[in-house]
Length: 280
Length: 351
Image (cartoon, rainbow over all chains, first blue to last red; front, side, top):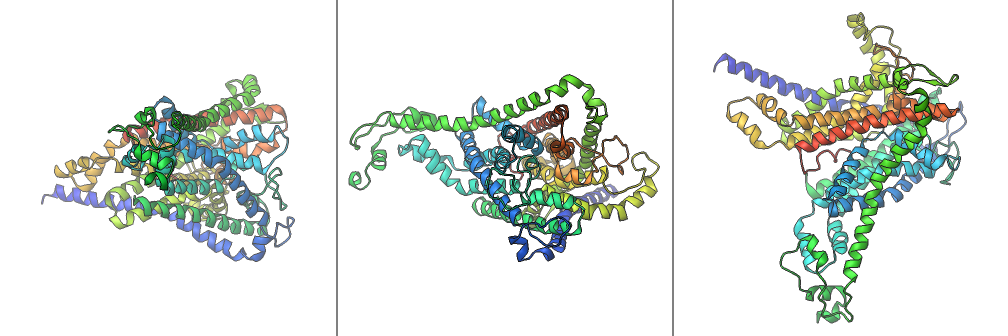
């Protein structure tokens, strides 16, 4: 073997090692962040943390019950508004999306997926907060719904397209009208994929903060009225992390651990469901 | 008899004669030839399909309408500032609510610098992930590692910010900044004292946050490269690295560039994590050790405090600039990715 071939082999081995190392470095922050969340957050999690509301600044103790309930309410609102629209748009893309409108909707959905959430926040403020002169959980829910729609539209379309064409032909051959074919045959076959897409969407908006800054605003009290300002875990973490008190920092880490567990459970559940069905 | 056990739809369906080949479009026009149901309802099917199509179209139209509404609203709300400052808004750097004078140059500068700094670190890492996972890694670790990288995208921005403040910044201050300063302190990019909140911290946090996006899409792009491309290079005697570098990457180049641009789009618009670590100072400083500002951070910090109409309008104009830039970057990126992987949904799967 010539020296030249040997050099090339060494070079190949070197770069193989290099990309492996880069890959390791890319994953490393994930473990660091998890370790810190557990290390700094777990010790502050107790019963009070889940059932009490925040105490005035400077005092010890208190919990984030209002933020947990607020997160659930706002995310639920976002789902109620965003899921039907997103899935409907996805059905349109899969069913009728071959024309110019389909292309445009698909393209805009992809582009909107990358729109900064803070811009959606100020948009929601102008439409849902300024007219009524009042911050509200509802406005926050709408802002999150706006973020969810384009994402859901694309994942739904993708899942529907995985359904074999023969199923559609069989249903139509049996005389099913097109809308029933689409809903009870195609959509049902893709149901687990669509649910997965929805879960991923929920996981993403549950951690959003920027669009809520000027809509839900945050609230120190326990309030389930969606027309009032509402606290969420993400807003709570932001306030506590940037505040001056050690006790706040402690609660910020604990809240982050709770939020992270919530988001991760959704993400892992979503991934697990898809893998079982399609083995990608 | 079928007719008695399953009246209505099913029996009608079974006795309906349909043409041999059914395209979805043809199905609409076929009238139901009903022999079993009590009363023929010739228009019902057609009617149901029309309602369905109309409803879905309305839902789909909500996306373009929403986009239009956002653009229109941003334009209307920022109009006073646009009229008053014109283009000087973009390159002047006085930001003074007291005199109602606004120039966004420092935040536009900060947005660009922090995002490019992030790309500088994220691109090699992401390409490393994509290449390693598609070409070199043992088969059994590919899926799990890809999933771990994607999990980075699931971490909320505010959690990155929290980690940035209390873990990353102390780490940089104690272990990273001093050696860099000792070696490169004479360059304009690293002079001055490192206090913590800085362009460097913002860039690193952003880099970690956009790695999952870039790597997921470049991985899909590399997977879409035909195997023959690889095999041909190997068949000519290339080493595995030469096959990747000389045959696979060039084939997917447009897609990889698209992936990088998508990452750039994310970095430009990222808000919470950046605002928590970048320092939020209206200043143009060349040194990465100095605090900076970004457009998204300015909106997040100042929007609720904006008292005067012009202040609010200026912040809306910042939002408009940010929106236009990210949309342009994203649109270009999508077109590039689609060019490589036409017809597939590459890229939409990233969390």
